[in-house]
Length: 132
Image 1 (cartoon, one colour):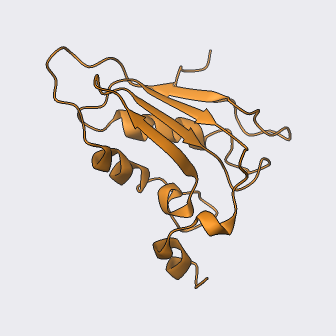
Image 2 (image 1 turned 45 degrees about the vertical axis):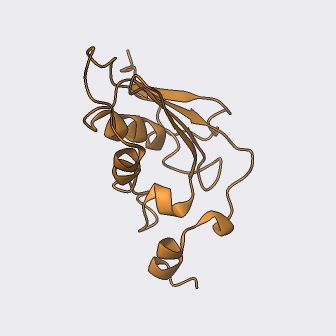
């Protein structure tokens, strides 16, 4: 049985729109909730193994919603539907964000619309990839 935070391993078929990865658990009553900046810093620690830039600066994160209870919902994409890390990157994202103090349950939703383009990359990513 697959852990609740994991997605199926990469295969020839790209993951479908809306597939999710989950991690974390509800925060205890009275636990201080993390700031969005702490969530972003955790996202900046995750790298696509084929690209030496973090997923946040690559522009793979479309939305981050942080609830009053510390639960986090993330809408993300990948560079391509057939991305070799499609089966693991959303799960790694959920786990890393769930490890942030003050974060409760994390749900990562995968989307293909709008499709990712290099225009979504930050200036940091462009410099790192020598694309400025």
